[in-house]
Image 1 (cartoon, one colour):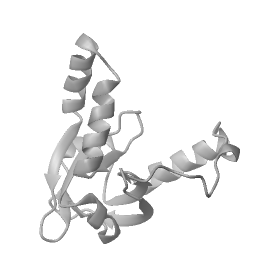
Image 2 (cartoon, rainbow, N blue to C red):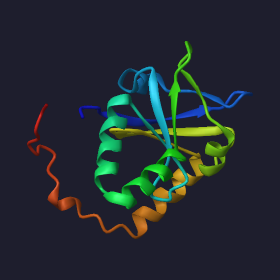
Image 3 (cartoon, rainbow, N blue to C red):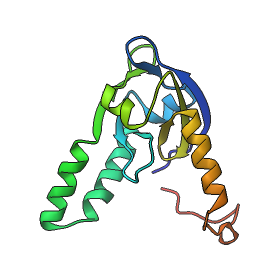
Image 4 (cartoon, rainbow, N blue to C red):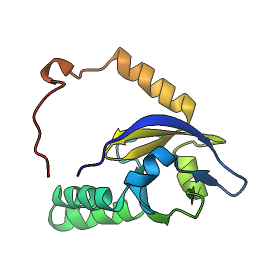
Length: 151
């Protein structure tokens, strides 16, 4: 995957639960996006491009086998929706998705390299502050110029 989605943009919902996908993300996401409720418990929604969804869903299914794989696929089916951006670059978000992510009037769209996450500004701030307090990530092993496999 070669998407490099980055940055944060604040958006508002209109009267019929539509939000405009930030133009900075539209080119990489494309006209068809896959929206998923977070699988790690964070109160956010995740947007994937078609290519990103293909990569994620393959990795997801490959993480399980047999009966567990079938159960995992069924659970995932309840957490995802395929959406098409309208002419104005908007997507409609169903009430159960909004409720899951605790979205109200405002949405913070955050580019996460291979996906976009949708948060309420307050939840993003709370997560960021909590993460800073008890984070166990060791960035000393990461180089700004690390070589990578370009496909």
